[in-house]
Image (cartoon, rainbow, N blue to C red):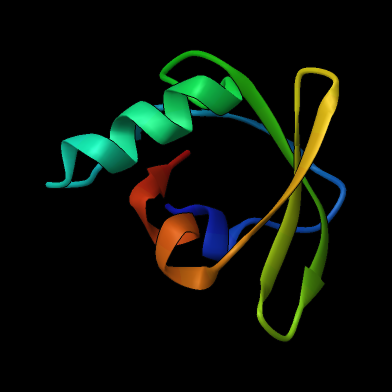
Length: 70
């Protein structure tokens, strides 16, 4: 299951980041998005979704949400 399939307001644990691009993995890691970390989908927008990781909120596009397995 990916973040695109997640329900709003529910907390999930990131299982894996599935991306071929090492720069993308590094970027997600800098946001605190890595295996074992909790993530919550706060809301969905036309251009993606707003997620909460640790104390931060980020707007990510659907392609990025597809790379995050929960």
